Length: 160
Image (cartoon, rainbow, N blue to C red):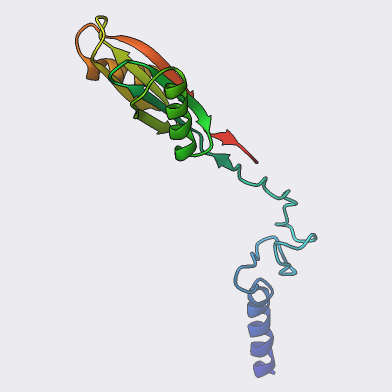
């Protein structure tokens, strides 16, 4: 009878261990049936709603063109591409009387500023993530007693 008692003792000792062993990736504590966590009857199941799709953003461009000889200018913002923004700024400058317009500033998904000396002539420009920062950078680059004469933002637009 002794070997039979030893066999009963071994089975009794290892039975709980065998019952608590689940396949890899399936938690066993509190899950006596080793039910996969993605099954509705699992104690670990969480009926999580699918996450919302990530938003999609479209870039927006802006540009400023100036005829440095006459001072005529043209600006645009919220354009869908760099080339659209530059072409529109040049066209606006020419419609305003400029004959030798050139792009002096282009930017996207940011704000822009232009600062000019009060007596005219020299100017500087900058772009940054906020109007305030763009103005600050344009004034620093201009030096002296410059004044901000233009600010505009072309910020991305959510399309989905």
